Amino acid sequence: MKARERENFLNRHIVTSLDREFEEGRSLALLRPEIGAFRIVPKSNEKLKKQQAKIDAFHSQEDMFVPRPEVPVTACPYDFKYIYKTDDGDREGTCQDWETEATFFKWRNLYGEERALEEMRVVYGETLPQSGLYFAMGTHSQYPETWLINGLIQLKSSGQASLF
Image 1 (cartoon, rainbow, N blue to C red):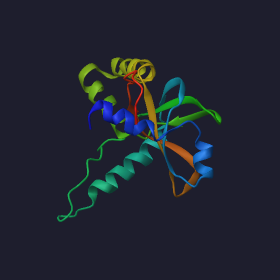
Image 2 (cartoon, one colour):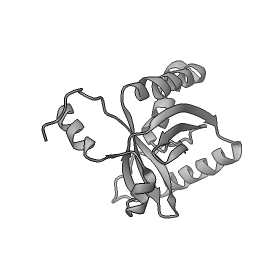
Image 3 (cartoon, rainbow, N blue to C red):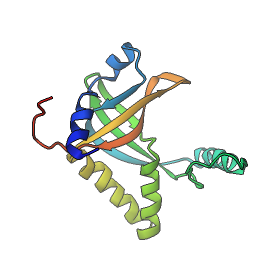
Image 4 (tube, rainbow, N blue to C red):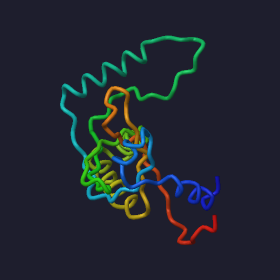
């Protein structure tokens, strides 16, 4: 989809209230948040061990007929969180987007951990929010009233109004 077409398509689906979406019975939303901060929080050893055990269990399963999805082999040692505001008020959410963790691992391999974390702070905390960052939000069947940041979507405005 061309950039201009993507903007027009997505603009029709952008929301500013998760409470309204929930009241309407929706469990997916493209949210335009007002981003206040991006935080990098080290995971506890206990949480890291639990996540690694789940990853190891997944990778130990064999299925010669089904292609394996791209799943990390190592649990990420950090949670990446956004503090943001919607029409409903202030919120904090952990970014569940696998690309965010993949970026951390790639940059850590390239630059080392300290610089990778600094790059994450700049790109995810400043650059992306300043140039049009939206959250792909969703709920989970076990926690139907909790909205999760499932993905980050970069949508730069063309500055041109749509005729459609």
